Length: 278
DNA sequence: CTTACGGCCTGTACGC
DNA sequence: TGCGTACAGGCCGTAA
Image (cartoon, rainbow, N blue to C red; front, side, top):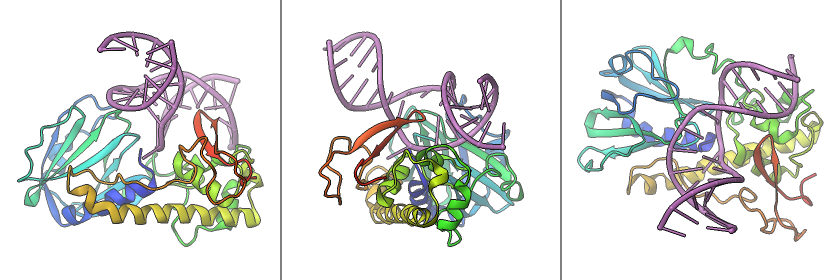
């Protein structure tokens, strides 16, 4: 489920409850996670304070005071529920796999029906060189990421631009939704070969990627408090998408009057406007 | 080297 | 109502 903006929103929602506080107890409620938890996971985490939470790509990095990093990835269906201890009469869900009891009575539940998410415990210094992190491309919201940087990453790539945007070695954080949205905003066909996106086209696309991600983070931030109140769920908010999941609806901001089309690329749905995107 | 595809899991929506 | 099918916002390993 979560792409960069959702992960960022979860990170921002967790920070006030977690930064500077200790994880008192960690409970694994389900043993057969697709990616098993590290050995002695609970013992290595319990009693440690979280100094801060950072983000790299779609990974959260919970920095612990003892020089270790708890890496959290939400996969497709992962979510973190933030509950107050006193209001915590909520029964556990079958997919509440890992439970963190935090100092001050807060509880975080890692719920992940499809179990595509994962948790790792690494020494801080090991993170960049880890096999999951080493291949990752640039952060799209960094100042250094611009049209030139994007074009350089796309050079020589024979895949459709849509598929290239999903490749975390090209750039990180963009998933199926924001790939569709950014291409629509930039007026670029998802079928165009990646290496032909250069010059001004690459400038437009890089700007569009930043724009859709930033707007979505802003939406998430503004709805954070609403989502924490009722059920503690973090990071799920309504953003209005221009094309994603809008098959058959008229293309917004375009006078073509044509309906949004849906095609399949590399097994994933792509939504776009034939008239606007070339 | 690059690109294409199957597989991992479960839940939900929809057509018959 | 029940059943089958398609699909879901991610990513890895392997094959070609």
